[in-house]
Image 1 (cartoon, helix red, strand yellow):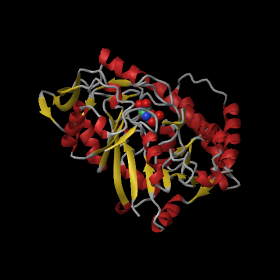
Image 2 (cartoon, helix red, strand yellow):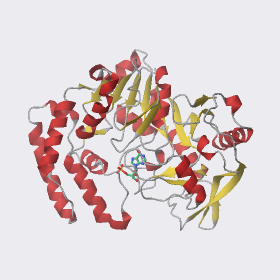
Image 3 (cartoon, helix red, strand yellow):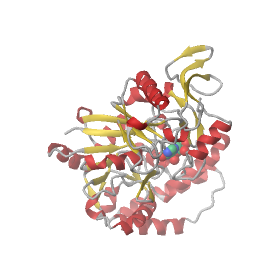
Image 4 (spheres, helix red, strand yellow):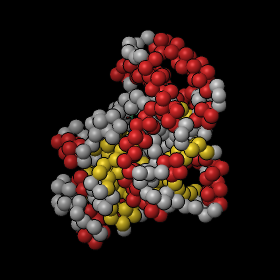
Length: 423
Ligand code: IMP
């Protein structure tokens, strides 16, 4: 059975958590393949809002197994807090949540290194979530990292010590003011590691291989967004993993020939949190309205998100890179009330009109060229079927489908599970 993928096509925060939750009833296994606690996947149902960081978004469904794949980086301290938040829901965590032995661990000193690196960059900072993501992936590719499987060894603390000591020397090298009490951080870490060790560790690539053979339906859940991909995003203002479709192969051990549908999620407008270029960013009342109505604040850091019109040049690029087979459009309800809705369909790039994403999209090189479409005034949040959608929104959807050459199969009209229109 092929493995389906679900990924964000913009700069993250597209609403992946909600859609995974909606789709989980069709799957046996939900598997996260990259990123870590920098993610904040928000789910809402029965009047409760849940934010997951590392745990896959299928966790609330009784019949689904959830796997944290080898491509994910885990902070035991944050993981423990996530598990504590789930305690009241009576989920059988030991059997429903499985962790890859090959997933790398975020040490307290990785977080400190992240902070030191950002502080040393001054104005050029990435705007990292400061969860230690970059330093942990650096240790992974530098072949120094600690993995979940190491915790099963008697000498894991020695390995930890050697790495943490090295990190301390590196923090000093940055020559910036970072306040910390490593003893306290380490006590929390060791306590959280003991908690993590109570969970089920697996060789996830083998597990998933056997599950595929047995005909299980698997959905790979991406984190962040395609424009934050380490290779294809707006480098260096990106995260440190492959957020695109190929990341699911390396992050779970699924062969490219076993990938099925690629479900791409995008918002009807764009947002970005942290630094980096954003050609369609709005600095006016329209941008402020999107932020206010869309409640655009980071689920992990609480930072306000930058807002702007939909960028079709960038979206097309993400569709291509990922081989998207179906699209899901989120938050069309936030644009209700805009008389005109703008879509960036080309860039003026150094005086030339182009329709592909160039190497450099900084404001000094790129000016967006917009197509105006009619807005929709109606409140969409109580609509339950595609028939009910206003004609101007139907036109907007048709326009996007024509441009992107991929069908939009879901239109989300609110944060709750029930506010989902299937087309
Ligand atoms: P890091 O992955 O925490 O190092 O952050 C690198 C960049 O990616 C920063 O601009 C973050 O704001 C952004 N970022 C990381 N994770 C997410 C996410 O889940 N949603 C949106 N932006 C993110």
